[in-house]
Length: 358
Image (cartoon, rainbow, N blue to C red):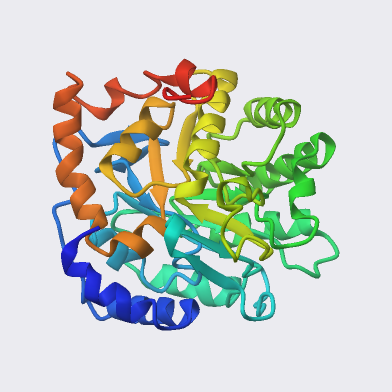
């Protein structure tokens, strides 16, 4: 952790997590953040028809309502993802619903897709200059009578402002949402999403975000359906409901999704297994436990083309993107790679078997 962030972190951690988060958003909106060079030799890629100046992105959940996408890009991220957005505004689950686990560099949240809804988020995205890659993560309202329709409406609503879509079927905090991983439900969902994209006369790439708690059969089926459907990518993975990695923590019994360091191995093993199923061409985004250039590199070697994080920045501070961008070229040189593309999938078999150190 950066020493300059120690004092600020102690102040922020004395506050309720959601209040601290609001302060972070206000600071970003006010321009109170580092501004590193985002375009680093060897780190850029052309993927999904988009220009990614570097492979690191802010994961969905930080900027739920599209308030600070450009500030996040200025912070050093090669891309950022807004949402999850739902058609109607909703308050989410009762508070308290976010918990820090400092000993594990982890968090548990059960926010439940709290947000301002399509209209407010679309208005903000429509007002920006469209410089830099900004994805939109779409979901369904908790009480919706037709959740599949909610996703299709999201695709149609944001087709003119999104650089890519992430279809989030993997949050553990909306009852029944993960049931959309099941074969029939997922096939119908993706069919309706592509129909909505076609009706919008859009070619915005669609990615599918999956849960890290699927068993081998469910993972195989989900990845194969995604591949057959024509989705351009997958995001691996969302938070976990497993608690084995934090069983000794007094907050382990709290309901919700666990993120941060304890998720790293589980999500990276799943990433490698998805890469083996879908082959080399599909774009994969690795998420879960990333907090350094080394963990970014591990995700790339396990099969990711791009990497996202959120909890890592809670613990490591707003300078984390800049530190990763400074350290990644050194790691590439150490491995004899001219670009990150040379490393994608290099250790996929080791990670698919449980990890290089397993």
